[in-house]
Amino acid sequence: MTVGFENRVAVVTGAGGGLGRSHALLLAARGARVVVNDPGPSRIPGREEGRAADEVVAEILAAGGQAVAHHVSIAEPEGAQSLVDLAISAFGRIDVLVNNAGVLRDKSFGKLELADWDLVRKVHLDGTAYCTRAAWPHMQKAGYGRIVFTTSTAGLYGSFGQANYAAAKMGMVGLMNVLRLEGAKYGILVNTLAPVAATSMTEGVLPEEVAPHFGPEHASAAVALLCSEAFGQSGIILSAAAGHYAVAELASTAGVQFDPATPPDPDTLLANWGRITDRSAMRRFENAGAETAAILEAIRAAT
Image (cartoon, rainbow, N blue to C red):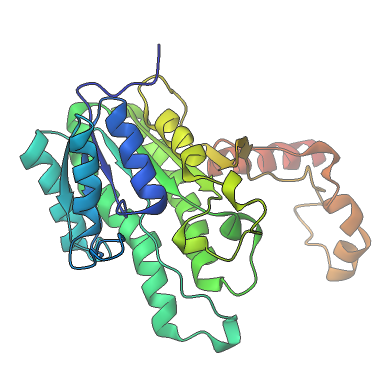
């Protein structure tokens, strides 16, 4: 089986430039009919009066593909719903949703305006939830769906001056972990991309000498894989940067089981901190219930 999207309809948010544009072009080249979302103006110098989404749609049409543009922000529920409604009215279905839209308002936490906290959260996390919620019933009814979230190394590992961005990006991981469970019986797979790419959004972040290696196409290849019928896993965090691909995971140390009948005092925890944090036997859990089951097993063994 190969990665193809014949007879599939894909929606890509924030697709007027950068990563989103690259995702949309690749999905279209692989046979998908694409809804290109972006509320912003054209990024082509001298053509700022036009719409970025229209430019990408024109590229897809010129290459022989099929696409329509959507110009409304997905940071509000109505905008997200209208995006999915357009996919249904234009192409009759929605099979793939790539949640890519994002903005930056970087500032150290002590100087961060709450309005910038709200804006970044609304576009990244809320917008992702709104679009996914709008698409969910259609995918449930069809018994098929591929959804990709876009997290960041800032969310996974931290990045100075990006509290709002990192919190929203890590929130997506929690959302994915739930939806991969709820979507399984409907054939809906939910995965997350953690890209590093040289785009206008990251301009000045990557050193000039290596930036040319960080083309968005590297990340788009990962998106196409995660969105395809050929890929059967859910709940994956796939990092993609400059040709390097890896899976990131949340894990727990084996830990220490104390007497469950007598809570330990803080001094005991301090004395055992080395054992509690011992990473020689890390464990990964399929869901929250699996971790609880592991704790219950440890209690039984200790009593």
